[in-house]
Image 1 (cartoon, helix red, strand yellow):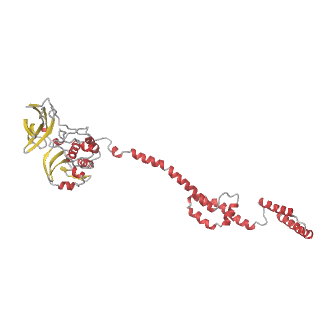
Image 2 (tube, rainbow, N blue to C red):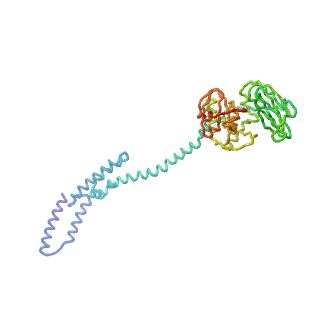
Image 3 (tube, rainbow, N blue to C red):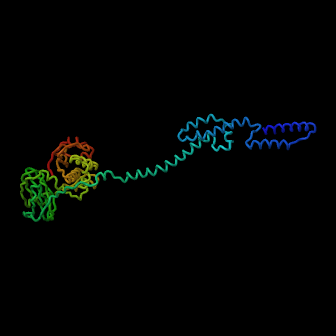
Length: 414
């Protein structure tokens, strides 16, 4: 009301001054300026203004819209950005400018809100996943690296059943230039000690089977398993005369009545010579836990040995492998596979033979293992009883069926 009264007075004064100006030609710029200043001052105080109706209505709508925006925007984190984007087309340029002119509202325009809400979470999401998950990921990777499941699954190795074919010089009998310990004949072995300045061989004869062993001639005991069952064995000590010729120095005859048919294939003798110190024997002790039968352990040992590549190489006729040669070299040939398998199985109480013979016309070595119960483990099928195992063929990439199908002529058993 006060503003209306002032406007009426101002209008009357302007009319009077206009008449005066028309009559006298004088100008009153200062009064017009002061009137504008009065109107402006009234507007700045928040009171009604003269020419702000069209501006005030959009501004009021914009202010109302922006004031409601915080209430609508508060749950924005739970609302997808689609809602905010849909509101953008409804906002005109004039609407945006009017909204920006409202000082009490610190929130930007709808477009600005969309960008701000989008940009801030993006930056946070860019840094947080880079820093926070990396540490857990590092810890997760580090912990499994420390956990050695296969080793912990075998916390304590199985006992090694060490059976050495012993020799006692106190009870050995002097026969010519050699000593014979025959006190363990019924257990499956004999011992011989020879001293000579020439090369020595020991020959064991059982029926039609003859086996020759190279031995040292410095008095070191040499033990031999009686691998051909019960009956008479003739043990001959032969000395070299020239070239490949040998003559007998002395011999003994023993009658073996084995108390256990498997004992000759469980002991460590001077030919298949192993002990608890062998790497392969320790490996067998580690592979035993978790197996439910001898057949399963054999399958596990064969599966381990066949990983070592097969190689062809020439060796002298007197070559006798160390059971660790295959593992130490990381590769091997038939004799080395056979000796390693024999040592590993024997050390775990599994009777194992080393067999020499002809395979497809070639000299070859393989094994036979005895298991009380059969089964298929690691691709190896075993029946209760004696089973032929040829790791050489398996290491060469052949199957067990292919190895079994090859014609074989066994000649000697060790």
